[in-house]
Amino acid sequence: MTESSASSPTTDLDARYGRDRRSRRPVLIGVLAVVVLAGLGWLTWAAVIGSNPPVTSRLLGFEVMSATSAKATIQVDRTKSVEANCRLQAKAADFSIVGELTLTIPADSARHQTLPATLTTQRSATSVVLIGCTTADSHHPH
Image (cartoon, rainbow, N blue to C red; front, side, top):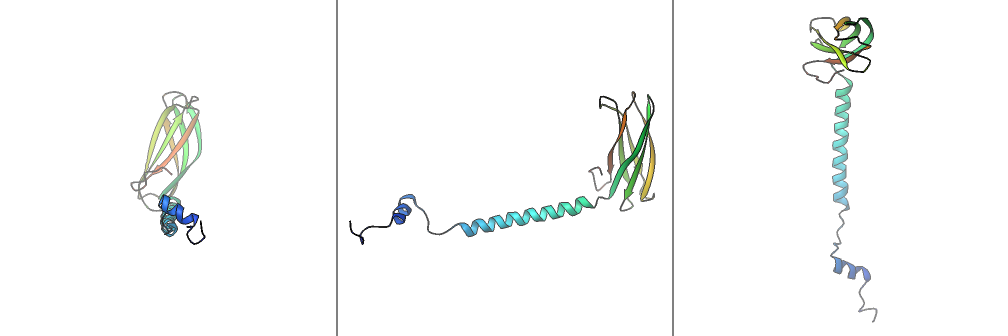
């Protein structure tokens, strides 16, 4: 076999397995760039929306008054004058829910409030939990 008649091993492999000489790397990089940009756009949107909820709340304290009642104090802060619904739960030692209360804060009330709440319980509670507050536009409790 002479050098002029011998074909290169790469040419033989390309012919045998059908490899194309064009590279798919630019297409792959383009698709990957679009996916990364879409992901960063979604992450930015979620961070901006999630960091500015229309209402926030926190449980300041609670006291079990008797076998059928518990008292809690919550703080509610709203960024706009919107109606908010705040949900509290009284829980027993076995973590079962023994009482529940939803406080409605009218839109025309103060934006920053400290509110007392009395929950009626089915049996003795050991704790009160603030689930959070929601508005008509924000259904995720904060």
